[in-house]
Length: 272
Image (cartoon, rainbow, N blue to C red; front, side, top):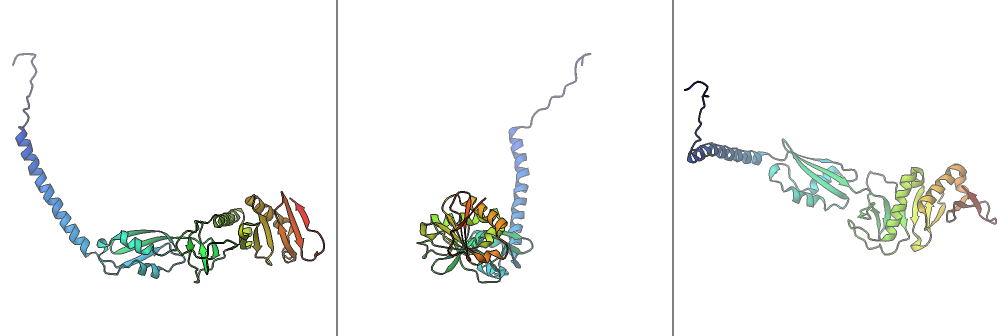
């Protein structure tokens, strides 16, 4: 080697055939290992049995009833369960809005439910509940006490079926009034014993306090509910509610009141 020349090493790449053979030698054990692991995993999964069914989120429905509705037997292979089929069986219950299923080691099937929340009572030939989406729910006669307004004065809903939505604009208008009352003040909401849609006429609230009728009309309902709340807070004392004959809210920014002890006098107007 002459002075000043660099010492270089020439690397000759392995032939293509040799690289392919080397790849096969690496892949074959890897594939065999995966196959063996898959076999043992399947064998292990087949030995895992359902030891418990846990239910979360149930309020109106009993956990035992939901577990029975799932159709899953304790000791059934946990990982052989068709969760989609199990979910369909559970969702046959009209009170349910959604169901999520999970398997948990060592042997639990977890059923997490979301129930439809009753918003009002409704007479569909017999007493039913209805949720915010207008879905008819069975009447609950259990331990859970529900303080719900009764919607009346709507035609054409007597034959509606449990679990199906009622596509009726008057019903949705009634549900919106109840929702507005809930948002405004819980006191006003709980005063509504009946919401009378009056078959398209002036909407009325029959108050829980002495059955006082409150005439709402059809326009600016949220504003009128707020007006009523202000009137009730400022002008009606605890003992005076029994003396009211009716409250009329159909006038702009005014509350027209009739008292029981003034049968011959004109109604009084209260401007707020």
